[in-house]
Image 1: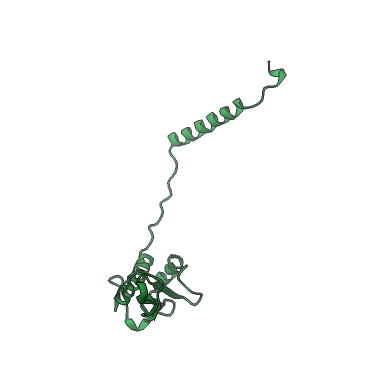
Image 2: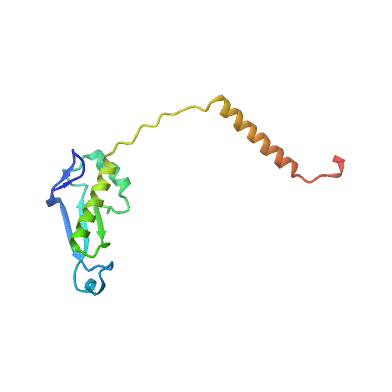
Length: 141
């Protein structure tokens, strides 16, 4: 059981783990033992993930999600299979937790009168600077 938030828990049956030979740390052991983990989670068809979370998960984890809605996480940063497994599960939980946070609604604001004046003054100064760069013609003497 993977607990993501108090409301979202994912049963182990929904997680598919494959262990493959790693390219990460481990010395000669890398060639003999399958320490890298490939964690697959079908987020689209999961009853554990509410639809609004899945919609945001598409944006948050778009680089890890297939067209079918399956999230694939590969972890080979540790020497031990168990540590890689924990790392992959923690990364999945972090992704789902991030997607479950509702974004704050933006409150539109208007610029103050002083900020408008500052903007116009800056534009006038910039225009004067550019005007001073013009080449001088003989009629200006």
